[in-house]
Length: 174
Image (cartoon, rainbow, N blue to C red; front, side, top):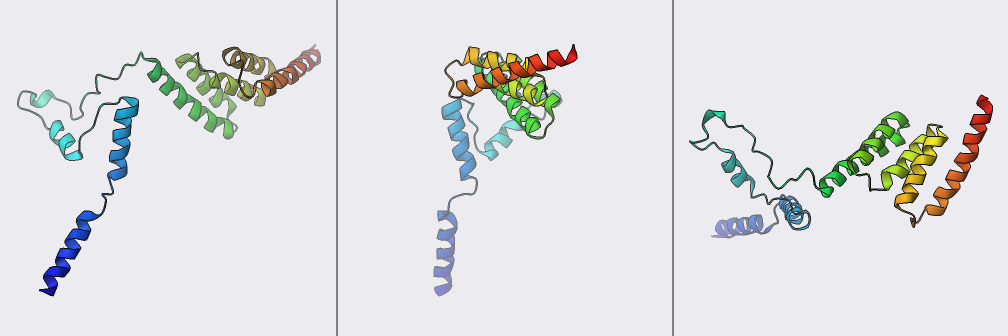
């Protein structure tokens, strides 16, 4: 009798604890609600959906097609691509690989030209690369898009300093 009670307690403990996959499902539910991403069912359902039906035959792919709700022309998708480029560019900037960082920030600007942050980072990268004219252009574009930025005064001071450096470089090359 005592063994049955112990087994019963073990069984109830086992099923009363939260699942380790609970954070994943919470994040998936949040993605569905906030980002409007398509809902994903349990892994078992997903595996069942990937099995080939008789009408699919042997020509069907192993991987399901991307959901039709992904609109690659939407501003949200462009911002996603741009933010990815900005994050990678920041990594390169911290590693002092300025050309790679500039390439990523330029790509971010192409994806989302209305976003000010890549322009500020372009200015910073060109400033560290010792190219004051391009740094000034990046900082000015940042202030054109975001004139009331919290750091606008600091950026204007940088532009003035870089302007003096550009004049000194031009005077030195003549």
